[in-house]
Length: 271
Ligand SMILES: CC(C)(COP(=O)(O)OP(=O)(O)OC[C@H]1O[C@@H](n2cnc3c(N)ncnc32)[C@H](O)[C@@H]1O)[C@@H](O)C(=O)NCCC(=O)NCCS
Ligand SMILES: Nc1ncnc2c1ncn2[C@@H]1O[C@H](COP(=O)(O)OP(=O)(O)OP(=O)(O)O)[C@@H](O)[C@H]1O
Image (tube, rainbow, N blue to C red; front, side, top):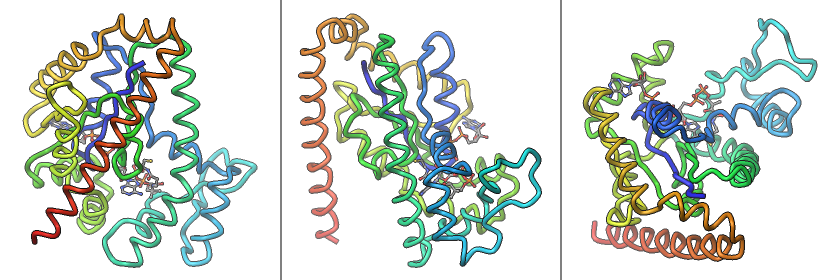
């Protein structure tokens, strides 16, 4: 089964692309890390308890008061309030973001693995792993290919974010954008994986949605050419071969990650 990592930065169009990929003619199953990240912090979960313990004492509005159908396990998290604690580039925000990531990411990773096994056993030829922090969390390691959805013009990104999330103030929106890496760097990282064999593909999304559909079509043609359906079936029918290919994929991705880190270090040293 081909794991297609889908990433980008805030409001660059990942969800729009994942909804294209989940519809015909692609009809691919999607594992959405943002949805899983919500599931693992529902009242009663270990994630919820850890967040309330750490952030509760210093965040008076951490929990929502007026909610219908209150869970017996407690009041749900006030996500915008938690967002104000963790988004931004001050040292305090960065530290709090790290704490939140350390609570949520292992739980999300576990849910992703469970979901991958389920889809593998159902004989899917490919699956989309929609993870905003794919590179940062190291989950690109398990992906056969990575699609980065990018916007070249930061003003377009900000305008789409403000239009979609009208409840955010300009400052909140800026903080959210600054909390994620520059999407052009992510695009370069995808290209570093190799565009010729479609291990890394960039879909630019500065124009309208019709153009985006065309760009997705082009990306999927090159991915399908590099990893045909019969190959996924062959790996399913012969599990030892499947395991061998998966292990080889991990080795290649690990070497690519190290190569990318080395390049970044060299670039930094030149400055
Ligand atoms: C802080 C929270 C509660 C704010 O929730 P809210 O509903 O207001 O925003 P939402 O979840 O829709 O996120 C908005 C944007 O910020 C991005 N984002 C979320 N968490 C992070 C993070 N830790 N670092 C950088 N960007 C992030 C999202 O991918 C999205 O693009 C929430 O984002 C969260 O729980 N984040 C930590 C979990 C996480 O890292 N999720 C990303 C996928 S694993
Ligand atoms: N090509 C486009 N033209 C116009 N609007 C677009 C285009 N692509 C996406 N949008 C709009 O921009 C907003 C952000 O897109 P989307 O929600 O897909 O981004 P995202 O990367 O998934 O964001 P997040 O990381 O915050 O979840 C949405 O309102 C979407 O409808």
